[in-house]
Structures are given as C-alpha cells and as structure tokens.
Amino acid sequence: MSQRIDSHQHFWQFDPVRDSWIDESMQIIQRDFLPEDLLPVLEKNNVKGCVAVQADQTEAQTHFLLDLAKQNDFIKGVVGWVDLLDKNVAGRLDIFSAEKKLKGFRHVVQGEADDFMLRDDFRRGIEALKTHDYTYDILVFHRQLPAAIDLANRFPSQAFVLDHIAKPDIKSGEILSWKNNIVELAKAENVLCKISGMVTEANWKTWTPDDLKPYLDVVFENFSPERLMFGSDWPVCLVASEYELVVKTLEDYIAQLPIEQQELIWFRNAERFYGLD
View 1 (spheres, rainbow, N blue to C red):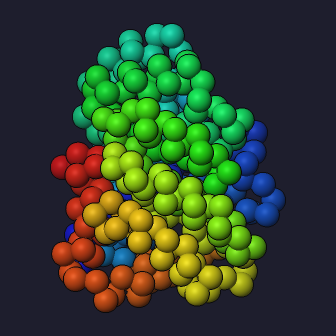
View 2 (view 1 turned 120 degrees about the horizontal axis):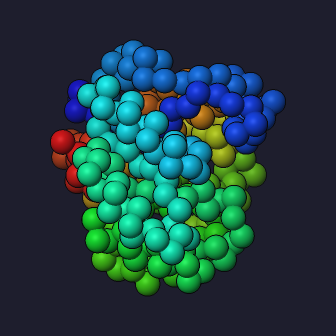
C-alpha cells in the first residue's frame, strides 16, 4: 500500500536551550532532523507524504515548517503554533490563512497545568480556529483527558485529533483511568485519534508489540477505524524504535481488517481531516 500518509512527524534544527525537553536520555535525537533525513525513510516504508507538526511554541517554528513544506512536495500539511491566548489571535489567523499548507494548530498542553484547556482565553482561541476551518491537535498526558473531554463537548463543530492516544502509562501497564476517559472522549464525534507516540510511553529498551496491544484494543474499540490515523512521531520515536518497527507493529495489528478500513487508517482519514491534496 503506497498511499500511506504519516500524520505526525517533526523537523527541527537542534538548539539545546530551546529544545531542553530533549535531555541526555534522548541523545540519539540531539541533532538536526530535516526533510532530507526523512524522505528516504518514508520511501523505504511506502509512505507518500507526511504532516509536519510543531515542536516549539513560536510562530517562527510555524514559518520554518511552512518554508520546508514549500520546498518539499511530500510535506502535505503543517500543524503550526500560534498564541491561542492572544487577544488578537483572530488577526494572526487571518494572516496565516494565506498559507495553503497550514492545516491546523497545536499547543503543548502536556507542559501546562491540568486545567489549562478550561481557561477562557484558551477557549476564545479555539473558537477563533473555526473561522478558517483550522484543525486542532490535542497534546495531553492521560491525566489531562477530563479537560480534553470538556473541550471537545464545548466545541462540537471544531475538528480535533488526539495526539499519541493521550500518552497512557504503557511502561507501568496502568490502563483503567486512561481507558475510562478514552471511552468518554470517543463519544464526541468531532474527535479523531492518532495511533502515534506509543513506543516512547513504553519501556524504551524492552517494549514489545504485546505491551501496546491492550491500548490499541481500547482506541480501536472506541474510535473505530473511521476515526484513527497512523502517525510515526519521527524522530522522537527513534529513542525507542526504528521507524520500520513502528510501521510493522501497526501493520501486524490491523492485518485482519478489511482493506478499506486499513486504508482509512493509513491515509484516508488523515487526508480528510487535514484537507490534504
């Protein structure tokens, strides 16, 4: 299947101060990662395009990703950053709306207080996204899911996608509270979910596909193939896995599904959600 879209990956020019989240335990990714690094990996794995997602909370990062997308056709879309708390966020979005490959925005909510998404100023920013039909990527730890549920229900016409299945504690095997919240979030039909970022929530050195299976079971049961999309989280995934193994784990898990459902997960849902050409 050569139609695959990687719905979630990153580019950066490594800066140890700005990128301090990439600590010594993640030495393997303490370097630049650019389109020329990713393209051969995509080609090897029959992936025809990708969505580049912000990793730094500046508009400069958004412009950096858009510039890369203009120079590289395989970057089909960009999920950027804009200050959603800014009183003039609508004006910023008006300016960005000229950028055809800019599909949506994300805030690193996992680094904020658990009630961050309940803030009035944040919600005003979310409301402004609809004017230009921008999507929003929800990046949270599993303990922040109650606020995500509230957000999704408050804005039923906003297109949301949950990144990294909300980062459950796969390493410890804890699943119950995460599962209960996923069941609730999936009731909101305006929310999709990325099958991404799982290997880095498991034990980096010893994880096996069996460790991921209970969590995959939950998202498949609740979101169904109609609302799931593949994402590698490259290059972050490299701290725990080669790209090929991330792909193969999902390939094996969905091998018994009808080909139409596999296509939804590999590329159709990403194309529809982000409006990719």
